[in-house]
Length: 478
Ligand code: FAD
Ligand code: SF4
Ligand code: SF4
Image (cartoon, rainbow, N blue to C red):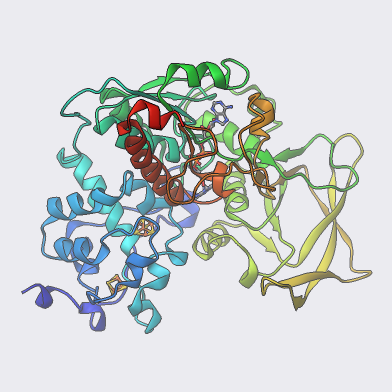
C-alpha cells in the first residue's frame, strides 16, 4: 500500500541535502549542496501527505505531478519517478537546483503551512534527474520521423532551449541563433556555478546538439544577421532573447571607474570558470580580489554578485538595500547563504552618489525607513534626513534589475508589437505575436522572471508552433 510508505512528516523532520560549510565553499565556485543519498531521498519523499488537492503542484509553473513522483521515489521506483517528473519539465535537474522553491512548490506545501517543515521537493527533483543521467535513463532526442518544416529560435536561454527540445522531438528542423559563443543564456553566463554548475547546463546542450538541433552562435540578430533574413529561412520563428538592458543608478559620480553592472561582473566570473581569457577580469576591472565591495540591490542578481565577490577574495562585501530583510525580493534561502559566507547586509540604505572623482572611493549612503504601504501593499521607503554617511568602496556593483532592449528598432521590424514596458506582446496562451508565424517566450515577454517560467513558455510556444505548422499554408499565412 502506497499509504504505508507515505505521510511520515509527523515522525520525520525536514532535511535538506547537507551544505558544505561556509568557510570551505566560499573559496570555490562549486555547488554548495551535496547530493542526497538514495535512502535520504526516499525518506524525505515519504514525508509527503499525498494531498488530494496538491497546492505544491498548482504553484509549480510547470504543474509537475509532484505527489506521484514523490510516492514513486519513496517506494524506490526511481526510474518511474524520473519518467513522470521529466514528462512535464524539460530541465528538472536545473529547476531542482535554482527554482526559488520557497516561493513556489515548497512554500505552498500543506505540511509547511501546518508547521512541520516542507517536503524538500526541489532536492528530490534534482536527485532523480542527476540519478537518471548517471544511470542512462535520460532519453536521447530521436524523432520517429523527420519533418521538412524548419523553425528558427532566436535566443539559446532556457525558453529557447525548452522549445527546441519539444520541436526537435516532433521531428521539426530546428536552428537556434545566439549572440554568445555558448548556448544556455543566463544559465551559462548569468547564474554562478555555486548555484548551478556549468557541466549540468552543458550536458543538456550537448544532448540537443546530438539530437539534431543546429546552433548558430556568435550571431547577434539585428547586426550579424537580420531578422527578415532569418524569417525568410524558416517556416516559423520563436523570439526568446531575454531582457538585458541594465537599470542604472542615476546619481552624481555614477560614471566613475570601479562602478560596474551586475551582468558584466557575473559574466566575466562565469567565463573565468570556463577557463576563458577575460581581459576585464585580468586587469582587475571586473575582479573583486582584495577590494572593498558594495553591491546595490536586493534581488537574486544582487545575491549572486555578493557571493561571487566573497569567492573572488574581496576584503569586505556589503549589500545595500533600501527596504528591510522582510521586504527584499531575493530568496530568503539565498540571503541566508550569503550571510553565512560573510556578506554584510546594510538594510534601509540607498545610494545618493559616489565619492572619488574618476575612480570610485566610496558610496554616499542615505538611510531610509519604511512608510505607508503603496498600491501594491509594499511599504514605501522614506528618507531619514541628516543620517547620510560614506561607505568606503573600491568596487561598486549595480544590481537593480533589467529591462527589455528595443527589439523592433534594433531589428528593423517596427511592426512587431510591444507593450508599454517594451516587452514583446504575445498571446499568454499561444505565445503568438502580432506577426504571422512569429512567437515569443520567456523574459522578453514577461520581463525579468524565472527559469521555470521560461521553460513553461518555451514548451507551450513549441506546441503552438506545431499546431501552426500543421495548418494548411493558406491559413498559416493569414
Ligand atoms: P535568457 O536566459 O536571458 O536567454 C536569452 C538568450 O538570448 C541569451 O543567450 C542571449 O545571448 C540571446 N540573445 C539576446 N539578444 C539576442 C540577439 N539580438 N541575437 C541573438 N541572441 C540574442 N531564475 C531562477 O529561476 N532562479 C535563479 O536562481 C535565477 N538567478 C538569476 C541570476 C541572475 C544573475 C540573473 C540575471 C537571472 C536569474 N534568474 C534566475 C532569472 C533567469 O535566469 C531568467 O528568468 C531566464 O534565464 C530567462 O530565460 P530566457 O530564455 O527568457 O532568456
Ligand atoms: Fe518546484 Fe520548480 Fe520543480 Fe516546479 S519545477 S516542482 S516549482 S522546483
Ligand atoms: Fe505532498 Fe506537500 Fe504536495 Fe501535499 S503539498 S502533495 S504534502 S508535497
